[in-house]
Image (cartoon, rainbow, N blue to C red; front, top):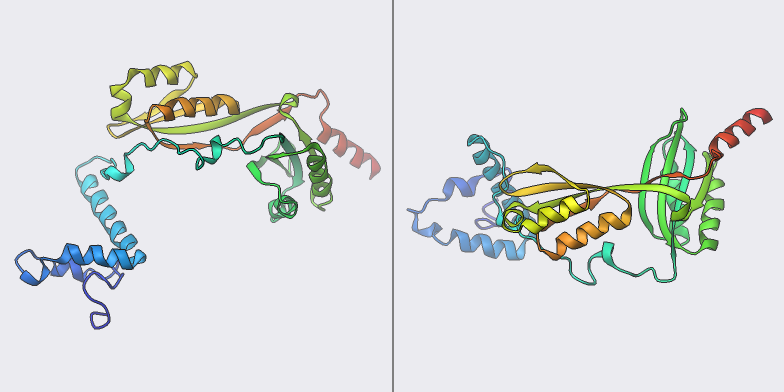
Length: 272
């Protein structure tokens, strides 16, 4: 491989190791090794990624030998506030549209999720969140999908989804018709949390809790409705301490006193 590529340009740093064996400050020809790596990285992105992976493995081995696990890359510990126009969770691009929650019950067979999402794709409706889990009825799975659309489109989606062979029932609801909940995790910079006591006050004010704290980062868990979860994120993000943010798909139950799935299953049994 040396015949075709120069030093640090072969891109096989994960398995080769020749560069490590040759790297010696006493050898005059290798004093420009770092410059060669930078030049190769500018040309070959794959080579750069492989060199970065090798660096991370070496750091992990060193930390493990010292009996501690922590991130030592400064690039991973920099809080970057959300940029207007690039933070999808904060954009108000759904003006005039209503957030509908579709609750779908289906039999537990492979490939049904693909059939359901294909209905949204064909009608150019973007899915905001999706949650799939087993329901209280044996052999039946529950899909909770949220999307912004008009009432006519939501009803059309429900009708088309119910036409799927393995789908038992589908309904759409607005927020006033259901109880819903979301869970989120926020990764905060520990030095900034310690330097600014207001951050801890905000976490307590929103009924969130710290689930992990170390010298590099702190993990905050918040469970609640969508508005509360996003408000907490906005407050902490404005203080410049958020490293990562993630929230789960919505889970929901209806406020109706009638269980529509039970009615449907009872009616089907009577027809049999």
